[in-house]
Image (cartoon, rainbow over all chains, first blue to last red; front, side, top):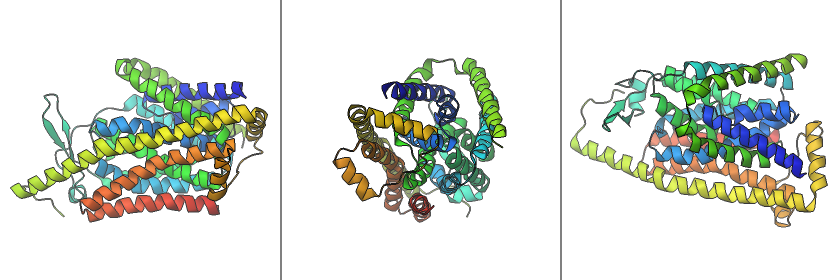
Length: 275
Length: 146
């Protein structure tokens, strides 16, 4: 028993560590870790991973909320969309054949790789559009001189539509869908990248929590796997977040992209083999 | 629908007070609550795993192999059964209880925001937050029926 526990724990620590350094979260790495290395069925891996995403987000969001970058109002509007998607996705996960989940996972890995390569800060929007003004979604960030700089928000319907998709993917695949969330806030809603990342981290726990509740209520979370994985991913993510300020993330980015593409190929191959 | 370009002094003071209150709740109380639930759930999970290792290591290995082979996909216990089995020291039930506690963290965070917006009398955001809470409860119901 101890060797299995130790192996799962080590796998989870590694996934949490790489997930934290890459900014993509542990779920992106723990699901393929469990499926490809521990030979756990996709559905069981998704259940265990959703719990670990909740755990990691709970640990990380304590720090993120403290730093003042999180836009709570934007998060709350978009959580309506992500929770709707996550509950639907987690419900559907019980009915879809494994190859569909594996194929979707491969597609999401490629999207994450694309996001890692192209992510860049957009120009600050000085004024919000009408709907975002009415909802008072704009905020303030400190500039280089320590002065407050106002930023506006745009296209909340477009952002919310993409958030439904992010939620569905989260519930179906056991991931936080952070890359999709940040892309929606960054490109569609024109939020500053650091605000998008912090707000996405704040939202990930609620999105994954919605999916995890469906799995838990169904009795579909394998406790024997989820417990060591949740503890390990959280531990790995904590170590990763401590090292992150000193790491040369730009140099590591290509390595993460290669890993994501390899995972996509392997999961895609599994999906095609299961057809 | 259009936000006025210039705010009166009173409106500025009001919005600053709201931001300070929001800030205090977010910076002080939310992290304390989140961290407490997180620590308690981690302790419960560790206790469950230790009990598994001490009492029934072979049962754990057997369960893991059955999950690998796809024999075990769902194992539901009602909340009452889960609590009573956890109190009587059943390792698997203790682990599931720890996982349930963990999922309380995001729920608690949304509940915090709900009360924050009620205090601010921000009707539309009370509705948004209520929708999210309802969605989380709907998830539990959907999981039970399907």
